[in-house]
Image (cartoon, rainbow, N blue to C red; front, side, top):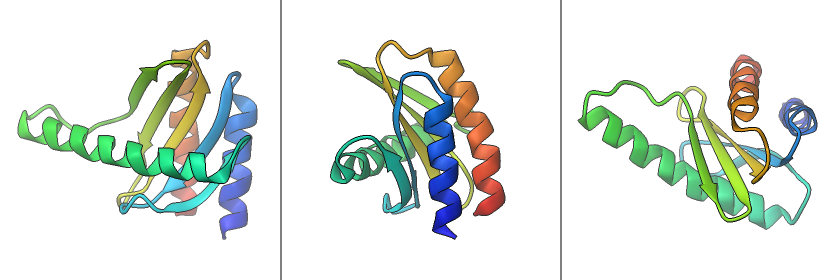
Length: 120
């Protein structure tokens, strides 16, 4: 089954200009699978840390009656990160170069979410 995830993640990265990697993680921040053009450790750590941010954002949204989190985008230094909640606590994290088109990345993450949810 993880072969399916690896191929989907590779397709996501290859289809988004400026994307460097993508990781599918579970509710505990553990990597289910990933595709990254760099050290494996870096993308796994990035996935776990942004899972924490997603959970904090969900809690803040719930506490303030703002509804479900559809996606998060974090800009920092030379990169952007998009976090896309999926289902059952799974989530997608995309690592992008700073110059990547944020709207295109959010749209790509949404399309990827549909495909990943079908396989989870």
